[in-house]
Length: 116
Image (cartoon, rainbow, N blue to C red; front, side):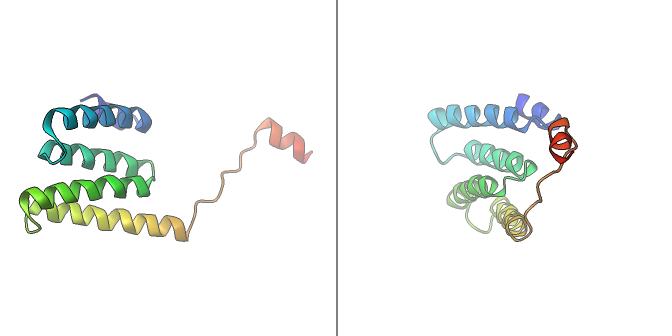
């Protein structure tokens, strides 16, 4: 699928655009609580995590979990796997908030001239 190809070349915003369109279309066709909706939510969560947007990743993974728990129960392997992703994204979000990434300093011509 196109979103996966874009993800492979690190075009995360392009991948998200296609996945969000797929989610909207599938919701219209299948309703809110369908395994395909859950799968798409997980894909969106994963792409958000690749861009270090763990808050959005958590939002979509929690939706995935809720759908899976409703359809298959908490003991289902898919639901348990989703819970592991939620824990991972939560940990990454906590780390990101605890140790924010410092701004990148570049040696652009404008910064050099300011220092000169």
